[in-house]
Length: 518
Image (tube, rainbow, N blue to C red; front, side, top):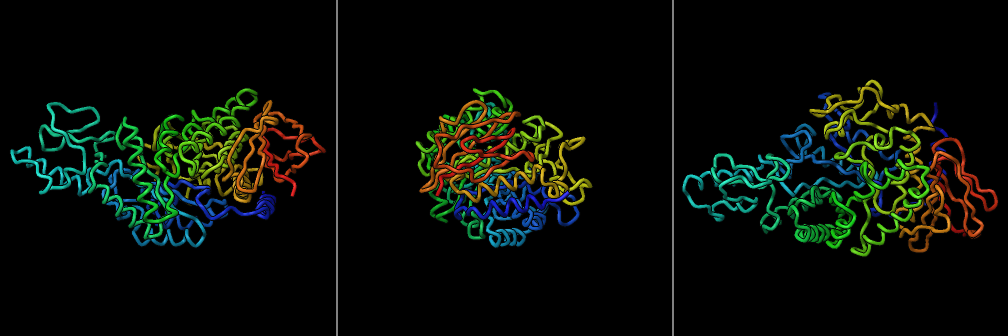
């Protein structure tokens, strides 16, 4: 096998142009624990990530989203005990500084998971507050002057434990809000002292070289209270850009299309587009209905509806589409491990406007061995021997009995692999910035049958993207588009896209991009 054809195709695509140096880039989500181990203990670490940066450059990604890297008592590290340090299993602060420097040298931006809905229960703030409440329970009055940390969390005194709370250890009658887990006490984001702590944390990492943050659990800042969550997001956005003008924030708001539209009123730069991602999202549903004309044509109209609504709430928003992530499973499993659909799912995500997010391993069609969170976060499948990466799966992780597709080491040598397809798709996106930056509308004249068509407009650039979402070839009449040319195409196999006069032939699951004749 050889990847010479892919290398040549990518080089040819790159010659078409270059995207601006902004946040409309492909962001690669990394769970450090499962990515690459550098010291032989079986657990991934920051030096392991550094060792694979050239791999990411070859793939074409322009950014990394690091899941939490701070000290924590759990494998996933979403219960932070020190916001200024690195978990020893992952390395040191010096390792993190080196990673940020190496990424910057390659033009790769880095955003870090900022977990401020809650801290860990072993964080010094919470431990100090609990110690004070234990004294209060013994008859002494609660005093926020003596212990300001009691205002950092949401403590209540009650006869019975309220929903979403847990008992304060050793303090009878006192409870703390903890919507996710007893190890994750919710922070009081209405407390000015807490907000100051968050500002200092953000400034610390931005000064180290981070480029922004992914905001975990933004819908639960004040569970069930959208207006207050929007206010917190607005404050976070304003604070971030005051510290670094191009600081990039993307929020996790796992909710409906209407709710996400409301949340954009906060002015937050990006919100993950859950209505399009996940197993129930638009990308997967359209692929599951491939060949159904009414289903296919909605792919174009849904993008237009999304762009119109979100920009109506926040004209400067950057969409954040994705297919899968650490909470929902793997894209390959969503589409029945059909290689052609796995490939096209990648293109559908990458060719949406905004900042596209790619979960590690999806570029090779990794699958899950179980239906729980640890199984969604299995070690990267670098090679068949399993000795070039992490060898200790997360606790509770079920590995697949057999992977559906080859490991990265083999796919890199294969011009027809999922990985090679992703390289070409990302190269197209990077070379034609109108794809990521453009305002999207359905191209009614061409959005017919099993061909989905959208027009993108950005500054002086225009493009029409066509996708045949069917297992059968399709023909498109371009007689009304005499001023347009076929600029680049992307197919799942060796069958080419052919423009013969005014007739455009799209093979099964093939995509074509038209641009105006110069």
